[in-house]
Image 1: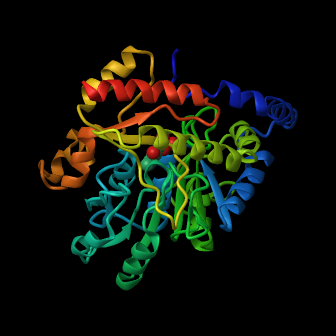
Image 2 (image 1 turned 180 degrees about the vertical axis):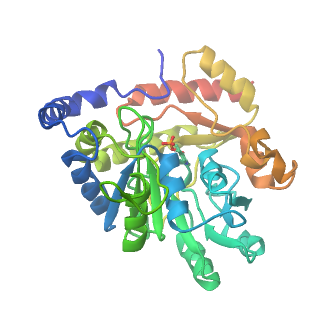
Length: 368
Ligand SMILES: *Cc1c(COP(=O)(O)O)cnc(C)c1O
């Protein structure tokens, strides 16, 4: 048996017809950029997130960059992020000239630790950017109350958390502004690159809308030096078709996670993810912690099981961020995770048999 890390072929079958019809419509209209379907999807997705506005952009990275820019974060400013995340969380801050300031994560949820935020706040801090890692939201009440106390903004990096809820509220409505990625492997993925900025703040909405379209106010009137970063109309067709199924697919992921949890429970040397009961986990990634990770990872791959490591190196120890002069030991919780975390196959249409096969192999390998 082979178990791929991700396989969306079956998922595609359920939306194929709708996508073909939608594509034909776009071909007929010819509105490939900023078209009707893109505008419709922006409204649908914002509504899905319990938010007012959505602005479709080129990628999750651009969504973050434009959101940070819209908050007027510039050279000399600081933004707080966790070091255990995808590099784009930090890059979007660096693009503006601002500095990412790291705060370690909680050992339980792998998300930004609210208890450690205050000590990292300075006069230059403009925002906190929690990442809802793997599909579970950060502790947003705690984070928002700190932000309020210091008069700084909260930007959600929700690139892995489409549809996740915190105390009943969707990710996308848990800060001033939220950013999602539609990279194909994300919980809601396009058939190419894409992203969206979601907010209920009209000023941020208008600013991001201008920034993604050459800083335009009228057709040839440019208020600021903007960018070319728009969500393709064809991608919006795919995303609209998928959005209708997202809650069901997230539920399937959650059922798979529960089955993994059941089969891996009590195995010495394996720790399964903890889902807090005041929020939902959408399991964009199902990551366990495992003893002898590198050996287990290599052997599973050899046996045809798709496993990956998210993430092997924390951002503060990446060469790209050497100028920040961090060293090993600065953020021990993040560093420990990089040593033993392992992402298992996870996609809505995987089968129980596949999960059983993965778990049997893990069981055998950790015993060694
Ligand atoms: C995927 C991801 C991004 C970047 O999104 P892209 O669409 O790939 O640019 C940013 N942050 C996190 C946490 C991600 O997982």
